[in-house]
Amino acid sequence: LIGVAGVGLADPLPSWQGASKDRIIEFVEAVSDVGGADYVTPADRIAVFDNDGTLWAEQPVYFQLFFALDRVAKIGKEDPSKLTSDVLKAAAAGDMDGVLAGGKEGLLEILALSHANQSLNEFSADVAAWVSGAKHPTTGLGYDEMTYQPMVELLRYLRDEEFKTYIVSGGGIDFMRVFAEDVYSIPPEQTIGSSLTSSYEVVNGVPTIIKNDALFFNDDKGGKPVAINHHIGKRPIMAVGNSDGDFEMLEYTTAGEGARLGVYIHHTDAEREWAYDREGHIGVLNRGLDEAEDRGWVLVDIKNEWTRIFTGEAE
Amino acid sequence: LIGVAGVGLADPLPSWQGASKDRIIEFVEAVSDVGGADYVTPADRIAVFDNDGTLWAEQPVYFQLFFALDRVAKIGKEDPSKLTSDVLKAAAAGDMDGVLAGGKEGLLEILALSHANQSLNEFSADVAAWVSGAKHPTTGLGYDEMTYQPMVELLRYLRDEEFKTYIVSGGGIDFMRVFAEDVYSIPPEQTIGSSLTSSYEVVNGVPTIIKNDALFFNDDKGGKPVAINHHIGKRPIMAVGNSDGDFEMLEYTTAGEGARLGVYIHHTDAEREWAYDREGHIGVLNRGLDEAEDRGWVLVDIKNEWTRIFTGEAE
Ligand SMILES: [Ca+2]
Ligand SMILES: [Ca+2]
Image (cartoon, rainbow over all chains, first blue to last red; front, side, top):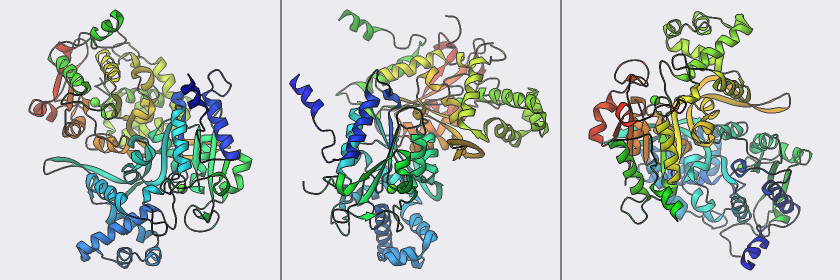
């Protein structure tokens, strides 16, 4: 009995402090309180999380872009004739300015060469090898060590309280599924993202899923509620994001009846991580910052409310 | 202890008899046998089921088409100007020959008027009202009473043995989700089907999912393994279907390593249900019938192996 009481009293969010922590715990306790006014049956305790900038870092560029560049470099090394354009050559050389100069078209070329026209099995093996070996250019950490310790605690806390946790990310669904179960304990069927079209083919007698090079679904902005409905078929009661790309997801989630929680992670810590919001081309947060308070959404101040940042840093 | 033993000894499939029943139980026991050669961890015990002709009946036409015709009739009664073509007029009159004469284009017109350009909430309410009131033209049963009792038993048996059961159907995802939880105990996030595109809009201040009239995904043939990968992200260990539209799903499922089970429901009972396979425009089974034995798939003979058919018929 002492042991059980001990578990109950342990801090479920040891890397958090301040008002955001209090509001999150208040919400979780309210919806879990059988007989309480805000009680929600476990089957409806759905929580959705953005990934880039919410569950792991996203600077100086989305980590999936680092993967794509490394992949293009490897392909170019094996067969330089595959680098058929300036933007692919820039990608292979790790020349980020050259990559960005190619605009959206250039990114799609990079995406096609690095992510498509191969089997899902080959792609997944590539991603797994990359995640286990690649290091972030400024922190020197593995990318899977740049997941946020406070968010991993939050995911675990929610699951302990019978929530079902989902990723709903603009990142690639097949990319994230390679590591989401290991690093977040979120299984593939709860990992939702953007995707290319794919097809089923029997290749040399082997039934195979092939990744094609056309966009199937862009899981961003209004696409997030659409994807939530398509995959889950229920409105979540909690949504967490960090940019205006998550605005509609938070809006849709918190517009439902009963207790709801919208949370924005605000990147305020230039020393331990990165500080950014209204400016730049990654994780822009304008409307969300303007409206969070009026809408009753929690705005997490990383600098003051997270006592630890990355899972991979020394405690 | 007597109670527990009693549960263990009870027949998990009381409406089944014969070789197919034996093979299904053998498979389920083998993958659930901790320490056995064929053991599969519960997280990987994924079973996928076609719906029309597998979990419920599908004659003389798919039940979703009956819904569409009833819906077009209702819309035409309220506003005859919406019946802008011969095929829509035929649909409103319940003239099946006229509907079929319109071909695929005509069906898409019927689909657009009955399923699209409305909110998901409105659509779901329409379906719920229809399911609770409409009767099948020849049996007089409610459509939700024409679910197959042996299959409901099989779904329950699998879940008791820690399988996760999914629907993977050519039918509409939003249509099935209205009743799948009630009639099959399969929640929305495990109900996969064909879909129209949808969009997110704030309508008079209310965040709303709108169903549009373009096809988003056709969950049939090679689309079934693609949808399984997209929604589940794992290869199932068991797949059950009834037509050549399920061939790729069974092929993909049973090509995986370890113990696998492919099952075809063969409609052989013209008296208690309908008998059909190689001919017609619904549930055609040719390649599957030719190859099931060589591929080691179970072929369920409804006439001889199911002692009861519909959940809604008197016992
Ligand atoms: Ca983000
Ligand atoms: Ca079928």
